[in-house]
Image 1 (tube, rainbow, N blue to C red):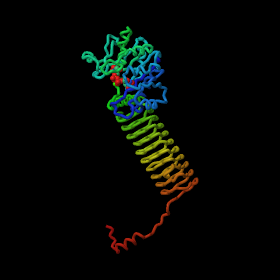
Image 2: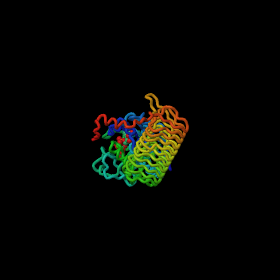
Image 3: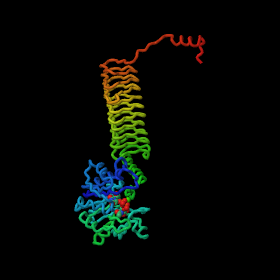
Image 4: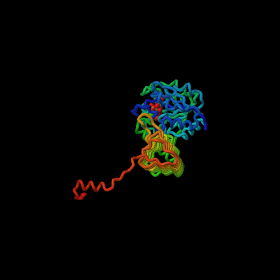
Length: 464
Ligand code: UD1
Ligand code: CA
């Protein structure tokens, strides 16, 4: 792999997005579009990444603050040549300089690396990534002589003859970093758009007797840019196919891949089966041999091996091996579900840990709870965690059994091996191995119903 400096142009306004969010931060498969270009450049061997930012620069910088990226500012968008010029201090004389666009997230590391290799072997002043397309409208056209590129003509400045050319400029280039800024300083803005075109350096190099070569790539899909929401959706669909295709090649079954969403940083173990309508988002990691039936949404969570998740939502939580969840349960952030736990239907959980082998099979709210091993939480149990001001914790120790329709009013503890009778409202600690009954005692009035009927109906016992 050959080292190089990547300069990513990302200062464009993105007016066609009609958005309050800077264009570069619109997400494709879970991360900002600019992130894909940065990742591809790094994976291809970029030692240094410089991003030229303009509109919404602060927000863009903030979104990437955890990464080693050199940001330079282009306050006014005066064209692609002017944009690259802003990176002069950061990039001049760094060997090979590759220019990429932040709004073209489908470019692959393989294509970038192949072009850098081509450039480093032939050592021209510039290499231009090109592609042949059916409809070249809107792109700069490549004017060639054999392998050499003589000029790139923008559509607005092209003659009818030049417009008929179907080989287009991708906008990705490799330059000799010791030559490009000198050539750029000679670029003028005497064109139809009044911009400083980066593409004009091609003619300048040719005038100086230097070589500019074309590097044609086979798959023009990689060069699809994003200017509006339709193109955003298109890029998402292409990227999504790639991601899911990769996991299918790793041994994951998707029953209907087109109906699923899998973000770029998700990982999935082999022999996991994913049914239609499953969304795997953010930093989610799914183990091997799991079954996930949609509609389900799992975000920023870790799921162990052989788990079953049926029509449920899991957010920012950890689920161990052989857990069964659903149908129709909702795990909100901060849940830690131990091995072989069963969380059944219509259970809402939040900030709760559940020890191995425990069961919360039906219709419960479990918030701010620490539940031990082999605990049974009966149907309809409510962990009453909120007093209107603060949240409080409930502890249910190993082997405890909570009868149906109980309220556990936090802060409270049910010690190990204890029972809570169905229908109880527990407000005080239940000691070990005890039974807590906290409900009104039942009274039976024998014969009461018959007497009442007689009184009202005068002996005419007609229930109709
Ligand atoms: C450019 C090329 C064209 C090529 C096309 C491929 C030029 C003159 N033309 O045209 O040959 O076929 O890309 O998509 O370069 N940007 C800045 N600052 C600026 C202007 C642009 O950072 O002042 C950034 C934009 O954010 C974008 C990229 O540069 O990421 C391309 O800019 P854009 O205006 O879309 O160029 P095109 O007119 O499409
Ligand atoms: Ca463009």
